[in-house]
Image (tube, rainbow, N blue to C red; front, side, top):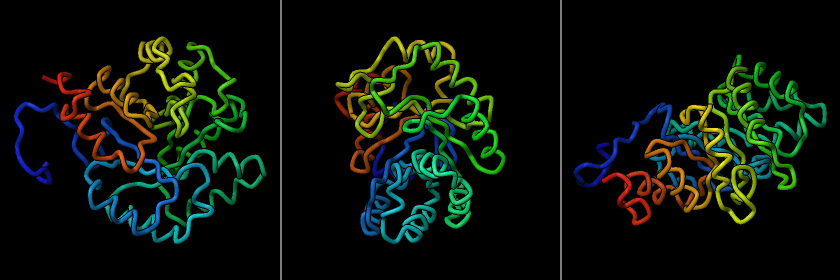
Length: 255
């Protein structure tokens, strides 16, 4: 890590870039300008592994092609939020989504049913289809807080989606961190997380954790190299210090 400014002894080992398989930080871009992306990369290039263009913001964000090229120049893959595929799918226009992937040279595809109620089999078929040509991230959980799945169902869905070809499975929380594995106030559903981790290796999961206290929970539970997603662009540096025990919240975690 020669981009660090000075030595501190006995910090936890951080999986290195590029192409790390755990310790992934997935950042959510909700409509940054080109200048904002340049500024983000200036300080965060070494700490960002994936960028998700949230929900369908890519449709209304100016200079999209140039933005994706900027991220690509830093060897950071960009993908569209899973909602975009749902938007095309429900309109019987999935072929247009596929053309979009080709046009923007997208290598990763998120498959979710957060807004659209896809049957398990339909979703698995989509994973099988896209995993032939793309790196698939599938997402389990609904954006609707009234739709709660039993823990055993979470485990079953995650296992099936990994077997169908998902590279990682994302646990839904929205950008607000208040659904899925979290309660409406943002507190972690501990029993659900325990049930998932009892059956699924944490390396196969990306926990959406937009709030600092949620990031702290998973770092303390699973260590420096837990995969975390939906990180706000302004929190990139802060998250990295949490991972390394350089902030009061995790100061004693790795000593």
